[in-house]
Amino acid sequence: MGFVLLDQFTLAGFAGLIDALRLAADHGGRSRQIHASWTIMSVDGQPRHASCGAAISANAALIDPSNFDYIAVCGGNDYLKSAASSPPLLDYLRRAVAARVRLIGVCTGTFTIARSGLVGNRKVCVNWNVFDIFRATFPSIAASADHLFLDEGDLLTCAGSTAAIDLGLYLIARHCGRDKARQAARHMILQDIRPARLPQPHFCAALNGVSDARIHAAAHFMEQRLDTPPSIEATARYVGVSPRQLERIFHTALRTSPAAFQRRLRLEYGKWLLENGTTSITQVAFDCGFADTAHFSREFKLLFQLRPSDIRKQSGAYTLPPMPSLVPVPPSTPTAPSGVMSKRSIHHIAA
View 1: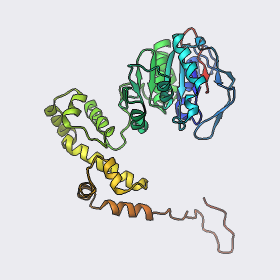
View 2: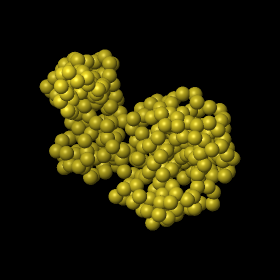
View 3: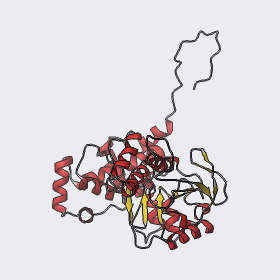
View 4: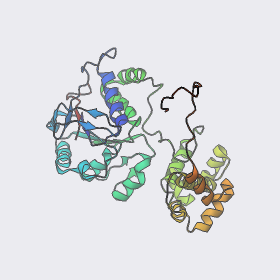
């Protein structure tokens, strides 16, 4: 497998995937590359820095893609910059596909694969945090944020972070057997192997106690379209039930209607935007799917008993309290500052 690390890649996604492979590659966690092996590379043979600042050294420049079974592109914060879609990198991915090597998109690495023109009619999994940006950038590509990862045969994509562990365990089970996958999971202190179809955690909806997958699917469908709220009929079609069934499902699980649930999602999102940004209240209203500020403000006050302007003022006036001293200090004493997967080796490529 080749891991292509992009500038400012997300460390958790890369580390989760490669560590799952490492733990399955040997017995007793000794890290010998028996069942799997990997090599760190980059286009220029130089280290790459993760978004947290950690540098990963490259062992070599890019290797002939035919040496690999998989090539994983690990993205991060710089996914919209030109370095993430440089001609040498895109050409390398195209040569990999020509050599019948499967591609893996980890986190925003899927953006790079999409720019290479290799997705075709396949569906990809992206992190909910960049779902809208991906749809706007690649409107012809079917994208989903209601899975941890997707396997489309010669293209696998995952949401990144801990979902990369799930994808790694899935591949280990495929190539090395479920016992090896369970071995790796136990070493990573995981209770079980999560399936691909498990939805990503919700941004607005608190559904931790809800087990009905249809509720989660509907919530994701709504969350991905907060600025253009879908009809209940469209949501029901997406879930695969009738509108009446959807109403019944929501009332049974949440004691509310789909419409009321969707309205609350939009308002919760609006509150978050007001608390965490500087966008005008008018723009926040539009971003939440309201046609005008008056309607948004009226619904907002009904739910939160505060006007949007009140939330904005509170947010703007907020300052962190001073750090309390843990040990009393006499006034005269100066104080200190506070504060094997298959026949080929598994390689790790940084672009």
